[in-house]
Amino acid sequence: MFVDRDGVLDFERSDYVKSIEELKIVPGACEKISRFAKDFPFVIMITNQSVVGRGIISDEKLREINEAVRYEFFRRTGRKIDAVYYCPHRPDEGCSCRKPKTLLFQKASVDFHLDLKKCVFIGDKQTDEEAARRIGCGFIRVKTNTSEIISKEPVSTT
Image 1 (cartoon, rainbow, N blue to C red):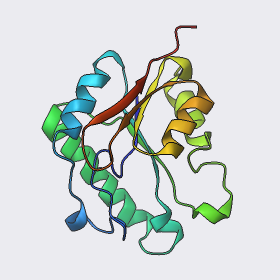
Image 2 (image 1 turned 90 degrees about the horizontal axis):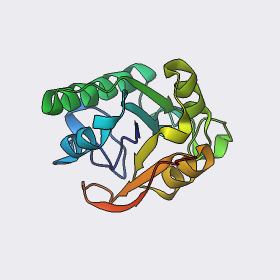
Image 3 (image 1 turned 30 degrees about the horizontal axis):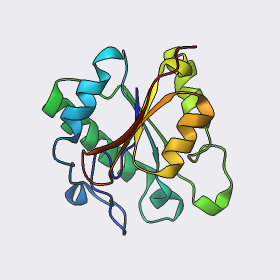
C-alpha cells in the first residue's frame, strides 16, 4: 500500500511543513490507513516535497520530518511505514519522480518486489489519482486534511 503525506497523514500547509514543530497529524488518519493496510505487507509513503527544491529546508530536515511522521504512525497503530520515497524537485523542473509521474512507485516496486496492479494508493490530490491510474493500482481519495474518504477505486483483479 502506498500513502501520500501532506494532506493525508499530516495537515498540509500553504507555507509547507518546515519543522517537526509545524507537523500536525490528521486526527484518525493513521488508524484508518492502518486498517486499509491490513491486507498489504508494506506501507510505503510517496510524497512530493518541493520544499527542498525551493531551498526552504534541507534534505536532512525533511528526513527528520518524515521520521517524525513514521514515528507517529507507529505510535498510533503499532504498524510501521516501511519506506519513504520523495521527490524534492519543484514542479517546473520536469523531473520523472514528481507525482503524477511514476518513478518513485517503480523504485518502490523493485525494492519491495511489488506487483503494482495489486497495490492501492491513498492520496488527496488529482496528481495522486493520476499516478495511481498510470501505474494501474487501486486508489482511495481522502478529503485534504481530514481522514474522510471521498472515493475508492478497487485494486485490479486482472
